[in-house]
Every structure is written in structure tokens, then in C-alpha cells.
Image (tube, one colour):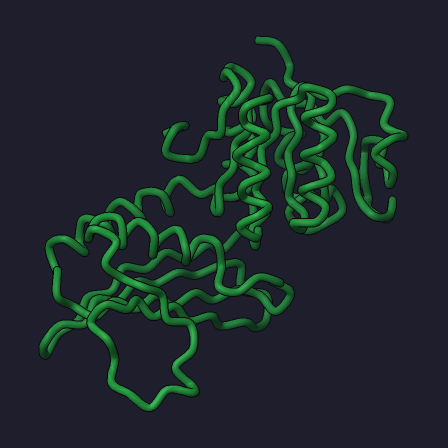
Length: 250
């Protein structure tokens, strides 16, 4: 098996460091270099703060950063014709459109969550929504205090799966604070909690008459996402141009 050489964008962040750590023990993966705003991590590979200074050309780029940085490394990937795995969240509609457009030129893997179990949860929640049609559906997501985007991309992914299963008849309610009215049957409430070092918990709750059902997924280690991203690397290296996600890989 040929070794796949990767560039990690956001290599000094918690997820970037986790990807580097997992790559050292995963067969067939080698970290060629990294990119971050400062060379301040404990790294075993060269780190660049300027994309124009990069000497090496990787086989695949892994992006765990912030949307503004993702857009810059995406431009670099398109220019150098390098496939890219985008694991960053919090993109605007304009940024998502750019990712989709880039898929016409290079293979792009983009997912709001790199956990296989979360994709299974999405499928289960979508099927339950059909079986429990008429229930009030609420989504609660909990993350560490440093998470920038809210709600999480995973919460939106779960909501979209449920909405698609029920003919897109729902809208998403993020804030009831200023409302003085009863809950609409066509809303999915999405709530964000931030605190401590919580890696990530997502719960989908179906409220019926006199009963409720909850589906919950909890991550206790970032290694889950790092391993998923590296599996995406191995998947993407063999793909044609296009935009792929966890469902394609699974």
C-alpha cells in the first residue's frame, strides 16, 4: 500500500494535534507538513504560517480549523489539484457554495461530524421521525466552552435528516426567548449548551402525549473524529472530482 502524505490545516489546534497523533500509528498515513497561524505546537513535521511558503505537495489535505482558514486552504487545494477533507464547521451559505463549486475541480470530502455512529444516529432519528410523526421534536447539543459556532453542524445535520424524512415541513427554532406563543407543530427546536471541556453530546427528543423518547450520542475523546478524518483520507484518495460525505464513505 502506498503511503498517503497529508497536510494538516489547523495543525496546532486540539483536533489538528489529535489527527497528527493518530496518523503516527495508522498504517498508510504520513504527516508531511502542517499549517497554522503560528508554529507553536509540539510537532514532528514542518509547520507553515504562509501558504505560499509551502515546499511540499501533499496527497491529501485535512482541514480542522475555522471557516476563514478553510476557504484559504481550499483555494490552495484547488490551485495545486490536491484532494481535501474538510472537517471544519460553521460555514455560511456562501462558503458552502464555494465548497460545492470546488468539487467540480478536485475531490472534496466535507462532513459536519466525522463519527460513524453519528451518521447511524442520523438514519435512526430520520426513521423514528416517520414512525413517530406528530410528536414534538427537540435537539439539544452540548460542547466545550471554546466552540465558536452555534448550533453545531451535527445538530443541523440531524435536523435536516429528520426534515427530509418528513417532506421538509419543519422550520428550525433557535430562540424562544422573545416569543409569547405556543409551540408550533412544524418547528424543530435546536438548543446549544457550552461549558467546560465537553467534547460533544447530541440528543434528539420526541415528545408525544404523556410519553417521550430520546436518542443520544456522546463523544468522550476527540480521537473518534481524528480517526474518522483519516479514514476519509483513505477513501478520498481514490475518488473522482466531486463533493463526498460520511454517507458516501460508509
